[in-house]
Length: 416
Image 1: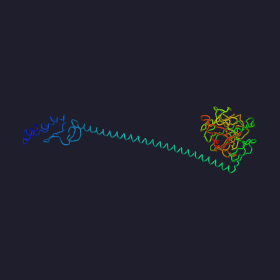
Image 2 (image 1 turned 90 degrees about the vertical axis):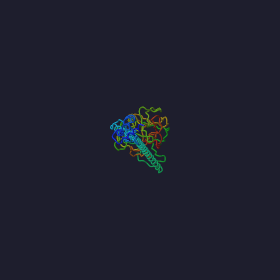
Image 3 (image 1 turned 60 degrees about the vertical axis):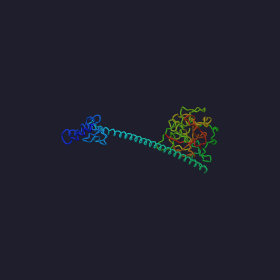
Image 4 (image 1 turned 30 degrees about the vertical axis):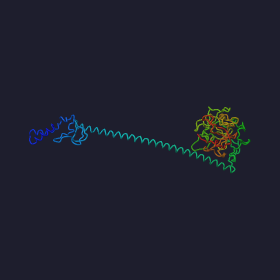
């Protein structure tokens, strides 16, 4: 009814300037209540809100307006009693929040990418290490195969020589003669392999531990003109020649352990002498031996040693000599034991060894450190021997056994 009366007054007063016209122009007043009763200004209905103030005869809200506070410009902008500066600030804050979300997402993605890159890097590193390890294993395998091929060729060569009826190695005929180093008789390469000469006046070697042969007491250090000491010679440069006085170590070819003795190990056979055994795979201070002449020989210090020469090996650290004998057996193998015996002033013929090249003896030829050698005990004819039999931890059995044609009779030389 109120609106009807208002429309009636407006219609009747449209032609003049009186009360009718005044009522018609109350757009912000009685008809729409402006900031007042129906819209309640900036209060209950949010000012310029839902009915849009009409500005004349058009009542009701403007179509499509969903504005907070009823802004006539549309959108979800903040209205009411906020200034334009505060509105702009709010919009910037909302944008910053959106940008913060984007930045957090980007950081998370970057973290994932970084973790993935690190994982790829570690994977590649592991693969590279595996590849290098495999290459090292292949190289080691190739070296082992090459060593085996070489040994096979040596065996075939030896068999061929045996089939040809053998050959004689040059050497001196006298087993005892001269003061320049005793030389064994010429050896022969027959059907039984290399056959070393027996000492003059004695039956051929039997290589039998029960065939007891005693040392000649006349060839001990007693009344011997051989000097008690020789200058210790170290290898120089590429010189591979072994000389009287050279310092060497002996590495067992099959097991890789070095010939060793020390004062803390003694035999268990009853001889109570210092034990000789195979120890570690790299030489230490107790693995060095000096090459010396046999008793009653007086070679010049530094003179070249030939295969077939009788020598002694004196342990540098303890001063004892590499020694073997009958009647005392190594406990686990039952073979003749090897000991370190005597000192600089006391030595006997059981300290004498004949140096031979593996396979053919090579008597009379120069002993080089690159050669694979056999050390033959002069009294018994048996050879320095080792095997993978352990007396205790890191104490590998070393004995005097056999004619010297086994792989376990091979030794390699390393010089100091």
